Image (cartoon, rainbow, N blue to C red; front, side, top):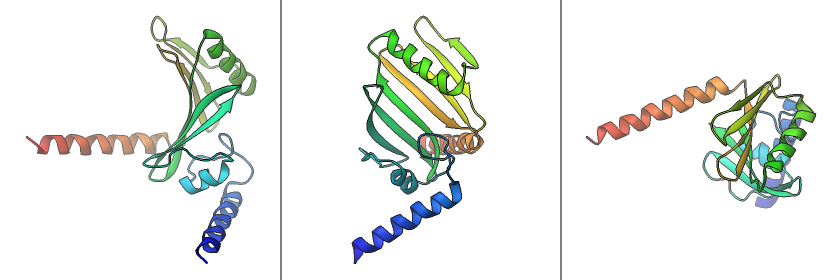
Length: 170
């Protein structure tokens, strides 16, 4: 009986998200603001972790193993990240080429140091950043523009709370 109830609940959530969000997506098969359950239901992958404010998957993209991380605040999807090891500079340029093919040329290319740089793309609802790090890690981040102010407000609130907790110890 419990399994049937879970199945019915999951089916209702998927149906509800299809009605609410339609066929349009912001990233992969998800829309910004979805809940963790809706995101898990949309993915064909099995989550490696879904504790705390994120869901983490392992996936293959362009023949490379990557982590796919969905991040939430108050159970609302606010951003998503592909994280992978880049063995050569060609790995960065291949990702940049593919993202540019889908979204057009980057609106910004910045060199932030000797080996650090990033590319930025904009869509009506999403900001996309390609950020190779000094090491061999590369991040492709997708941010909800609509929920950016909400995210910044929540992060500031958390920062103030942590500061107050720290100060209360003195």
